[in-house]
Length: 539
Image 1 (cartoon, rainbow, N blue to C red):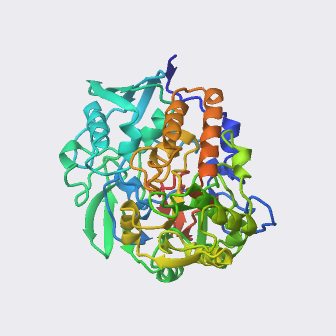
Image 2 (image 1 turned 90 degrees about the horizontal axis):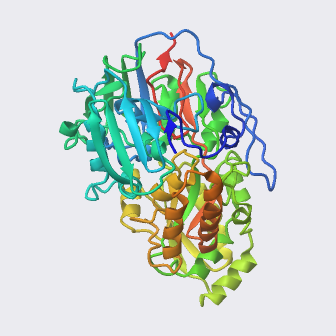
Image 3 (image 1 turned 30 degrees about the vertical axis):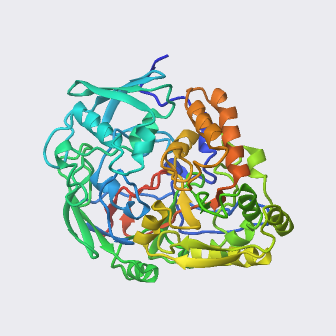
């Protein structure tokens, strides 16, 4: 079976589009300059009244100033949330999610492709260049796949590409052939995450990044600001419009908002829900988001250490979560509540898994007694208000309910760097986390999501009795490009995740970005990055 220059058949366009409730024009990307919010008990979330951004004639020139949250790491293979302002400016990939349909991959550096179940042949566009002036050739794709398959670097792409890619070879300067170990249904999705770095710049990518994005690196003053300037050889005609983008490091959320309102910055990432509600009618600000369904809030239980190595304890914890109360008090009723990672109208949704738990403290007490812990225990949750606005309020709400069943929860707030470092090192009991890559196919998050993936799993589930079946099911689910064949496999995986309870999904994470009124043409992607290549500044 061969497919030419067309994304894999995963789910119908209608099914895909249903993943984003309330999509506007402009490919479902919403600018919320007037939010009417209502959430009733038992609903799946908030209703957002929105309109699409209306662009006028683009005006070239100018410097857009964005407010970053902390220290920047440039290696795009790590894909940290704090670097969302950075990667898409500096780097390009073979595919992206900026096409007409925002939920499926669209060619970027690729011109065309042919696909079979176990092979992908990609032809590169002509006259595309890295920011060091060298033409991009097929060998660059080969080199980056080899780097992605290097386990010593410690990035998440290893789990994605090493498990699937058998080999890659350059047929000629513009054509690369990628062979897969078995049937692989998300080839283009994977390559959309593989930002290309020239081999000669890989060693220094963290300090002197070189890519093929619309802007090239100019300077970085650690703890102060990053400056990127227009890349004149960018492959998209007449883009970017901007002369430069400056990313100021402003860790304090209140200071970022103050700078946005004063006009000193033009873009602020990760607005807290309270700020969205407060700023909704302010003419100085535009609030943009993407449809729900691609990313979600979760609390990850460290199953490699007591008491969360006990399934009964994990299940008891699941019964203590009052999602509606958390949504109301922590997220201002803006986040659609959920137990699983799919909206009900999405093809992959599993109704049984979605309704496995209820808020039931009596049942939690029963399970704790059955686990031999009738008096409860002490534990901690690591949060970061900088990374996940609202996580402190979420933890406080949950803390009260856990106390009702004898569990004493200590809330430990961590700065951005330690929040990630300690999580990856396994130094946590419970981690308040944001999960998902904006993509819909279940293979993507199961192979890359840190608490889900079979390799280098950061919830440390490899010692659990269900692990072998879980790993095999993940492999089986990716062994067909027919969604009807894959659906029952992923239904079973969702039930394992629900029954074993090591990831407690609470709500869909709607990431809000605040823009000054002068920013035009900005289109966030479903994958959550920030691309300023086609943005411009009004006078």
